[in-house]
Length: 341
Image (cartoon, rainbow, N blue to C red):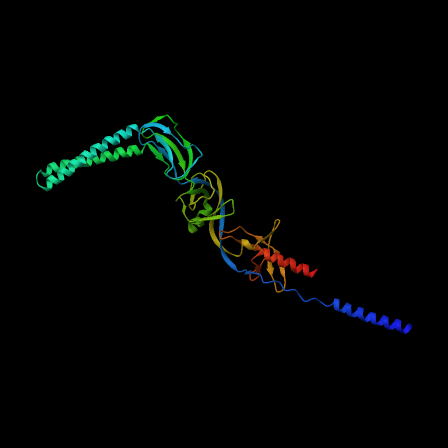
């Protein structure tokens, strides 16, 4: 009986020892899935200085009366948006219609007389001088008709371009004469920024003639249409530069501030697309791909460039592989570390 117990104990110890050896054997390393990657390489980027600019409209005009009359309709008011060609003011047109009708009758009569004189001249029944008089009368009647039609057209005033009404100088019922200012408007489709540049930066700004306009929504507009004065202001010693913005609605309004960056040189940086950046609260980082693992690396980044990339100031080196899709990389990173535990 004693021998049987010893044999059983020995076999149990052998089994436990085998199990212990089997459990302590190292697990095969788990491979990371295939991830789209970017290899960091130095690239040339623009060096710039930033200043505040004030937005102003390129097209701002005051519409004046071109004919006399009483105002009977003003369908728009200050602050309203108007499309190009929209009616903004209408005058009474009774007098202008009467003049146009009279001019039309005189023109028809002169035209008929001119046609008859042409036929008679062709048959040599009249002298050339008589035909010339008829020709002059016909041209005069035609000019009078065009003038009367134009005066009639002036009784309805239309917006010269799409924009915003900023002021109105008349009211319905007023009688106005030619030259009277009626309404002022500005276009939001063609804007520019006015920026004061210190004299120490005007040289590089003249050389590169390129500006970057930083919008509130994160977009960056580029402009090479700069108006640089030949001399500085005698009191401030700065240059008042006008930067014409690309056409279109950028949700910018005259009188507001906007940040403008002027290219002043070039420098080399490691660039990474904004789409590859992973945000963890206030921390910006990337997933660095190594042989069989992923490493989350915090980066010190510069300002977003116009082509939606960030210059890496610190945290990564040239030649390293970065995951292009931070979401897919985060899932792979989680799976790897879960397997390790």
